[in-house]
Amino acid sequence: MKVLVIGFGDVGRSVTKILLSKNIEVTAIDIEEVTAEGVDFLRRNALSEELWEEIDLNEYSSAVVALPNDVDALLCIMMLKRKREDLLILARCNNPKYREKMALAGADYVIDLPTVSSQMIILTIFKEEAEKRLFYENVHFRTYTIKENSPIIGKRTDEIDNVLVLAVRRGEEVLDSCEIAEGDTILVVGKLEDLKRFEEKFITHSKQ
Image 1: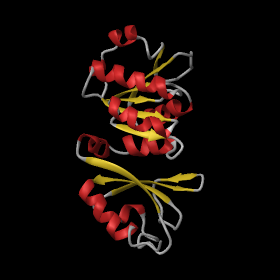
Image 2: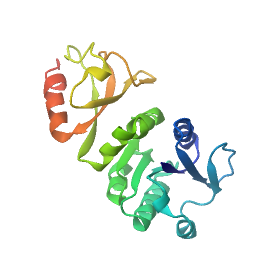
Image 3: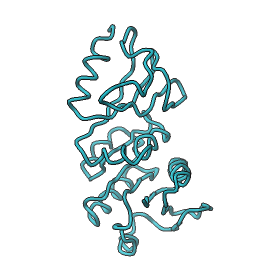
Image 4: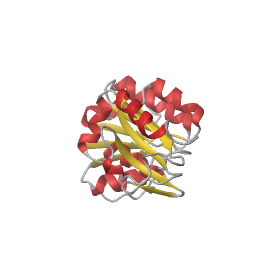
């Protein structure tokens, strides 16, 4: 498995560190020179047409677009999709107004950084190979804030059937395994029909 990380700032480095710990090959691209042990690093402009003529995207299972500027990220997504239509693309988004634009440009999943931390990117994309494959199916992601008296309070993240609770944000912490508590924000992945059943059971019946 080989992943392309475009943008080697804080988010790009955090993603790369965990990918390397899972023995996943990483090629990183950034306009600034960065020391990156174990990474095939290219000091290049990600918006250069010449760059994408040189790189064979068929070598990569997916690309993480972690550029700090949303307009640059949008252009990069379009360039990647033009070169390889079926490439799995995951993008960071600083301003929520660009989320839909990035999705329309071809990003399979857009991470809104004001809402979801870089830890959630990893938990979403690369927790296990089986979970990664969910991106190729009819799978959706939802976030929910747990209200008072929700039936899900006290349940562990791995006890929920039919959907997968990928992460729990509790204050400034992001947890991947814990008992769910009132006030937590949870990131859930599943097929649309399973998410609807999950919402009916645990969300809509909570005290408003």
